[in-house]
Image (tube, rainbow over all chains, first blue to last red):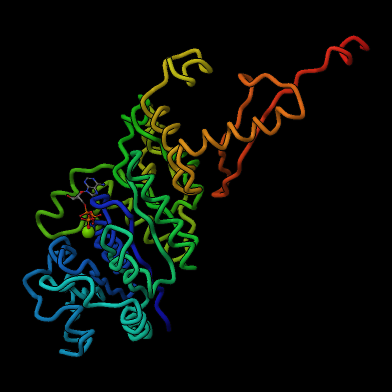
Length: 266
Length: 89
Ligand SMILES: Nc1ncnc2c1ncn2[C@@H]1O[C@H](COP(=O)(O)OP(=O)(O)OP(=O)(O)O)[C@@H](O)[C@H]1O
Ligand SMILES: [Mg+2]
């Protein structure tokens, strides 16, 4: 048994990497996969609060790497899920406390015991990004449908290729169907046309994401959340299932349309 | 009125403009050829070609293009037919 190590990265900050990591962690765990999420954003730790596990931190990633604790001691179990763990980032250190080879060693140590290792990358293209992708088997690039985020995604896709970690796959986050319909937001096809990479998920703009973050309950836990469904779909694709993409940008009316819309969830 | 308006005969939406701008920006990012250098490149190419053939500088289209993450320099230079060959036909 060997885990797939997946890094979630973006180039541009604030596009939804941490939200994606937390939700894919939950969604994969719900599929009875054994999952560990690692926050590599050293100095700007956030995955712990988004997952709602911040009160249980004793040790962190840097403690593990510096040998101040055993790996298992730094792994916080999410008790709501069958097999979901978090290794938090250090908050009072900086990126230089970890090297790419440390990350390769760490992920190799985790591989035998898990199905998925998810790595939440910091923004940027420097050390933190290199640490985040060092152990990756697969890289997911998160972007938003706006010029600057797509531009940075393109840059990251190129760097991922250069590091022989490609081809990266794309998660298009914060889509607003109404804006796409009136021509004020790049559509999924526009972004794919420009970036020319594989799509693995479309996540709508959804208020429930913020509500979930407020409470420390990732929306993938919420059966009724649209964004939650989008993350569950990505998780299924990661397990090899062929879940069709539905362009939810053109809501259809009428009875059949309403039925179709139920499935129109990224 | 931008180039998109011209082709569509309609007003370009903001996303059309975003997409066009993105395409241009990405090509320059990827090839590391800034727009000003591209202008210079264009002028020099045309100077060389002008030594050998006759063409209308205003009808020339030289651009960086990208397909499937591969960049290429594309030049379309419509040539003027010489008066003699025109007479023959
Ligand atoms: N689909 C969405 N709908 C609504 N809000 C969202 C969505 N995705 C992310 N957000 C919000 O955007 C903000 C940034 O998200 P997040 O922290 O996941 O980004 P990040 O890429 O990890 O940022 P950083 O680069 O700082 O690490 C958060 O407030 C989050 O709640
Ligand atoms: Mg983050």
